[in-house]
Length: 142
Image (tube, rainbow, N blue to C red; front, side, top):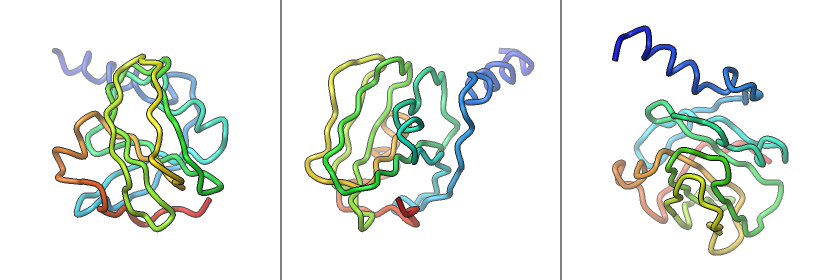
């Protein structure tokens, strides 16, 4: 792949190139790893999520922030990326990690009330050695 084509492909996957609102970013510690995460805090941003995205940069993801501790469910409608999702409680502890397939309409639900969910490229948590009971910090307030 030529460098010019690679650069154009990378630009095409950005939120701005897709006509999406650019969300605020935060650096998170997930276990011993650093992650750059877009923060989806509003109902509109949470509903849009990573739809239409064709790629994620290494160690980048999206953190969904909810107003209340409630069970949450996700699906992959209009999302071409295979993703893994970590459901996180209000204390920052991961309570579940699930893999999600592109475009699938089946739901992936937290096992109980959560305050956050972090989507990363599929397999990221496994490759990083992150598992249930590991922590994510600092987490933004709702």
